[in-house]
Amino acid sequence: MLNIKIIYFVLTLFAHSVLPLCIYTDEADAATRFADLDRFPQSADAYLPMEPDELISSFSNQQIYSEEYLRNYFAPWQNDDLSYLDLSFEKIMNFQKITAGKQYYTADGKVFPRASLSKIASNGIIDPNATPRSGIVVSLADVRVLPTSTPLYSSLSFAKGQNGRLKLDVLQVSTIKPGEPLAIFCSSVDSDWLFVATGAVVGWIRAKNAALMDDDLKDTYMYSPHSVIIRDNLQITDQNNKILCRIKLGAVLPRDGGDLLLPERGKSGMAVLRRYTPADGAAASFPVPFTPRAAAAVMDQLMGEQYGWGGMNGFRDCSSMTRDYFSVFGVWLPRNSGDQAKTGAVIPLSNTPSEGRPGVIVSNAVPYATLIHMPGHIMLYIGLYDGVPVVFHNTWGVRTNSGRAVVGRAVVSGLRLGEELPNRPANSLLIDRIDSLVFPIANIRIK
Image 1 (cartoon, helix red, strand yellow):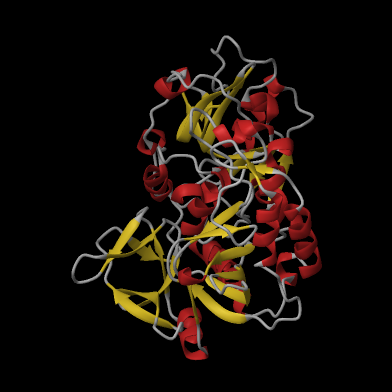
Image 2 (tube, one colour):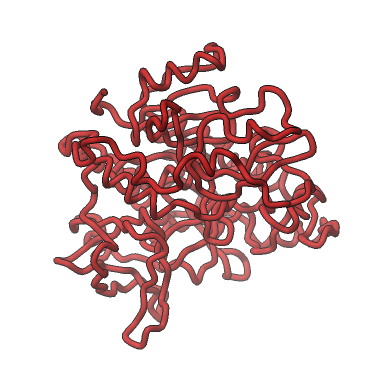
């Protein structure tokens, strides 16, 4: 089910040339009023069917998927190399060498010195023969292509962004949640960074965001019952109300009775577990029964969230949103939209004329359980509204002849979002560019 190629590792550098949905220029950032966002309610409850508590997938079927989810989740602790990600150190090291030879710009539009980039790269030399250590994430961590927090951009337009918004930092790979298992392969020369792999991504994270796991803690983590966070941006505080960490919806954690077991970094760098009693409605047994009502509750937690390429600033992009959504129900998805589009059963749409695609969607797609893919973007089909297929997605915006009209958040829309814009190029609507329906779950209830 998981097949992440090296293309995901390099995605952040080449996205602006191969992912046309994610391209924008310095178009004036006037507040574009999209007709779809007025027409379609921006609340998931508005799309619930007549029987909102009927299972979309049987719970026994979900348990099969959740077992596979946990196998992928804990893969970093059970492999000595990156073969489970279909990666090799040779590919990664070669890519880092290429990266260090390119020209980039800083946020203020200045050329970033190549000597400085080379110095950053030399701080992150990977030992391909290193035996990985088992680790865990203790606070939300950015995953970087190189060991630096400095944002870099491939062009002046990307550095400037949309009036300072939606900048694309090409070194940003993803973010990983507290509690995610890690394989730690090496430290940077200055010891501030770790080169790690999760069940889905590889890259550099700040050393302070991780801790080492001993065998007893690993066993506790793997073999305890598990819960999943169903309230987004859950703040974990101590007895003095000091915020210890923030956990995003979709995080999977072990539990003991009604308490979650959260990892913390001890003084020795080893992980220790803190018991945390979640508030009502913040966590649930993993996986959550997959019903339309439960799906709508997850969507409403994500509705309106700001777009964040690669998890920038703690936000989500299109594929991290769909990934976290399905995590609640025990379904593992790869991290990027291209690989998600290959997960499960697929119905191609490329050879179907645009005017015929709504009919194919309505006849085949299962609300809340079907993804709709186009190059560089992925969406969740949620059903019909006034006879029109609607999707839930986190999107930058709609292409225009002068750049992009920004949406920049998670919304419900039709597949003709932005049709009313006067300066829109031909064949640029979502309905024109979608290429497949994707069914990550087998044996789902067919209408």
